Length: 380
Ligand SMILES: Nc1ncnc2c1ncn2[C@@H]1O[C@H](COP(=O)(O)OP(=O)(O)OP(=O)(O)O)[C@@H](O)[C@H]1O
Ligand SMILES: [Mg+2]
Image (cartoon, rainbow, N blue to C red):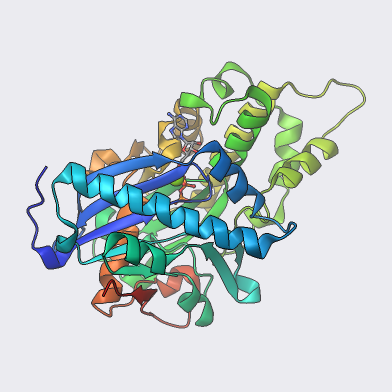
């Protein structure tokens, strides 16, 4: 495919999120609003890199040394993704204005003033010969925000319509952007993290079934959820806390799940089977999202899904039940493939940085105002 857009408007977005599954790379034409995907490529992480990234999400021996090495390795994975993306699209590197590289979040602690992404943007600029914009979250946090979610501006641009829409990203964590219907103001946009999604589903599937994820939700769909376990998990105060709010692996960790399993133990019954736990986690994901819509964005007429969880049929089915009577549809129905959305958002945020436009939505992150996000690593 040959890119049609003006060279100054070609951006690459690289997203590797909390699922730790791999890198989504898009080539985006940012001369139009919303930006358009010209090419997409997905590169899964090797199991070794995934394991190391997961380990670096909590304190451990020699972690500063290991974080440096992992960041450098990520830069090589990102650079290979960019090479393959541009090679397949037939677009020379010199035509790309900049890469927006989110990096890999290993700590998200906005209340302490930081969110840390492993990334080596200088290496990426050196390896690709393309300007790199990175470190998108810090400035919003410095301005009093959560530094998350950051895809909301893109969700509004891509999915605004006559009807109010709840855009739900089903990544490692689920997040919601409430996109008002026609005529509404940007200051009325809301957005926040709802709770755990693929990160716990993947963890459990890897532990108990030896698979990277529950493909199409087949395992979860083979069992009924456990009501007691679900109630224990739903009691977490994060779910009822008022936005702005954001979360990550710090809260919704394997330890969180094992505590919930411990609390729901009952001598009168057997521990739930692994597929029952997976069905329960799948239901939890859906209940949390549906109640977030009901509570904070009840005007939503439609529910638009994006992110890898959109491919999970069981998640889709249960979400449709929970959101009834609101129709639930994939973002592809509105012209953007669900796997492209987050990477496109970071291509667009790189474009905003280069144009010195703010990229955050203060009503979402809680920042004192709009800010230009990210830092530039020029290629030359
Ligand atoms: N066919 C499928 N069936 C079920 N689940 C799938 C399928 N394909 C992908 N997934 C899930 O989607 C996850 C990846 O989703 P995605 O890349 O959107 O999350 P992420 O990297 O955490 O992104 P972000 O944090 O930006 O939202 C996988 O880890 C897996 O759990
Ligand atoms: Mg991913």
